[in-house]
Length: 337
Ligand code: PMP
Image (cartoon, rainbow, N blue to C red; front, side, top):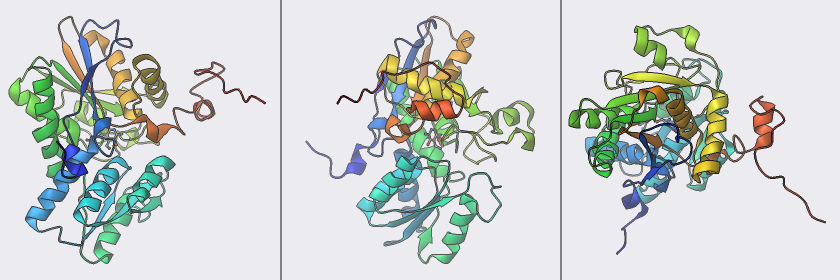
């Protein structure tokens, strides 16, 4: 038995019980491990779906160039699909993203343009603006625009949501997901709420992002926006893929708590997860009073730890940011003579 190409291996990711970190929580806590996708993240699902839908609508033509502003994971999904389907890729990203993510995109033949992080989205140097300009200038190009493209939410409505429903045999009571473009939480959340409207959909947001305040007040507050370190979640604008009606509540998690929890997941659960998985588990612990015996909580683990070895998995990096003081998290490396 074999798959015809790597794209056929996308999806059907495992659901794994967390046994140690949430031991004070009476509920069953399950992590949906998206790193078994070929690009090691959940974004493979929506990347392929956006391409397939654009092929059907004629927006993406044979031999075309895919241009997108991406923090890496969407780029990886697009780049892999582009190899199989014969497209070129140009990605714009920010200087906040790990070098590993950029190098990995280049491995699939994609061109990557690194833009400054701390400029307004409207600024012509921003990674949004640069990708929009390139779309105008490069012939036969198409910009998926993952933030506003409904295929993003739809992929998670068609795949992630049903997988979780089936894997928990309909017993899920809470879904916890970090929100970036919003595609994962809105798509999976919508499907699950259609199955059982009592399911609580809990979003994880960062300090420095607008989602929580907007959900609670309906106000887009620019004062909420400031630089932060956590990767993949939170935004300084409202993407169309964030469906605020599907999301019951947002919990904010600090950069420090997210970084340290990312490491704890490796140490205590044996799962090498990315930064936003740490945010989501830190959010779970902050919200522990919401869960009772018999509840089944599913947390999405969007990507893999290998993309963060130079960051939260590096003690010097943690110390430079004040996330660690004198304590040592791992064994010393002893250079034997
Ligand atoms: N975590 C990581 C590591 C991501 O790359 C993303 C995508 N930005 C998310 C979480 C959030 O997923 P979504 O865009 O579907 O909201």
